[in-house]
Image 1 (cartoon, helix red, strand yellow):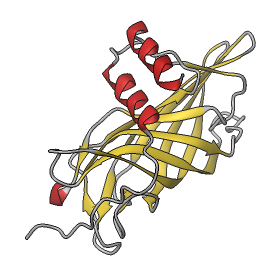
Image 2: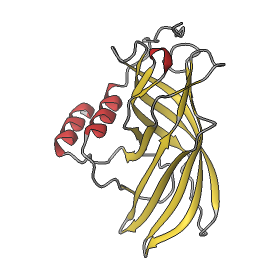
Image 3: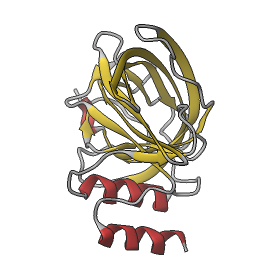
Image 4: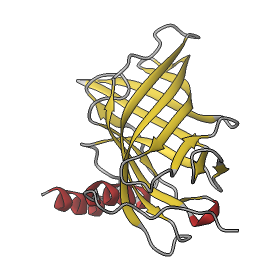
Length: 223
């Protein structure tokens, strides 16, 4: 029996620019993933987390082109090798949602909270620090999502990642990602696992995608 999924709420503004940004970044060829920030805390006020995958769930539900923004607070990472830290963040996510198996997609946005664990594994060079990371919790619901539809990080799978921070003149080059196992609930009580993980990479409101042509298109979107 198909899952009963409420209709998509289309009454709120549609975040076309951020969704287009995620689509263009995901389509860019692989290359350097470091992003410049003035400070070495996470998540900076101009930081973005960009999803590069299309993720499907039972009942024809799908999400793609995720962009986390308006993130806070910007927390200092562990300073002693071998030490750990847990940090909690909030923000909003803009994305595309399908409720018909990917036949059609509509823009959506919602508030988001997530909890990250950091473990400082040590320096990898004179100016570079490496951290093993795990997204321990993520909750996404409300906003323009259909009523009762919700997404979360899987409580039974480790959503692991790595963060490196390299000191450069005037700031830091940071590379950070998670491969997140998610679940979807149509009613807030029964949860269904995704068919794929979501790769969430660190980006910035000021970052230049690997492909210059894509950057020109993004500038046009924001004019």
